[in-house]
Image 1: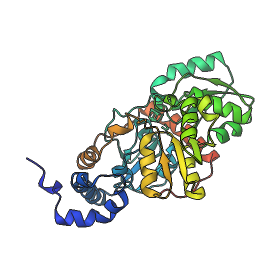
Image 2: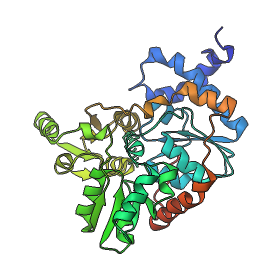
Image 3: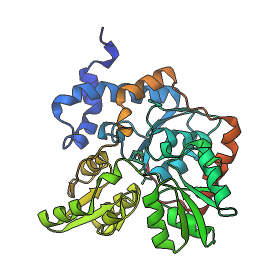
Length: 341
Ligand code: 13P
Ligand code: SF4
């Protein structure tokens, strides 16, 4: 029997109308009666539970614009997680992001609506691999992209995100670092810093699908195309981009420069979120979705708030050192603009 509280009643329609007006360009009207009761129920439960939803820029527009309290790139989510006074934090993102939030909030309830939401980078390396790298390169500091498990973070000197990787590596003041797990981000950082980098061989299954040839074809088809690329893309792609940056850096570029047309070389849902928020900029995008990010839905966010599960728990043996690696990163990078949803 359908849950009566999830009916599309006149009250739900009225309460969610302003939100739908924002999303009308990207969410078909016929779909709204399915989303609106979930959005409405999540808002009510958030109040009752003193909960917030943190959503990554790759979350579907109904989540990103519909129920998130704080949105941003991995760096912003890690930073905001260290500041919130909410009692319950729902992470609309992938598992490594939820683990980072838990590391910063060991005493709070941190929920991940689908714990199977992984990441090809995080899956590419384990703690024993880091120990082996250290043995091969004694005395060389280890920098880990946040797209790693807590167990890996516990083995490294400092974390970084795509938004601060160059700053973090430069802050170490050494001629050589081990950088893991993303080989292409490592390559990009080596080029920007001149620091010799020992790289792991991980890659993002979404960003490796873009190619320099594809970008050249887009440039031929569209005038005035500004190409924004995430540093997880391959070097042939980064070489022809106008800006290489984190998802927050791309958004910042679009908000401040207002290009007529952008090619977003990153996960596809972000293009929808940008289109909803900044309708005067045309977003051209070869659509590659992250299957892991897509596991988070309004239905499982609601279920998570109802049951206060699944909770993120971190092995106490790794929590301390992993938290230190994240805190070292946050101390290197000054806070940026607020990211409230
Ligand atoms: P950002 O830190 O740029 O948001 O990227 C996270 C990520 O998973 C990219 O694929
Ligand atoms: Fe991981 Fe790539 Fe998905 Fe980001 S887009 S979460 S790096 S698989």
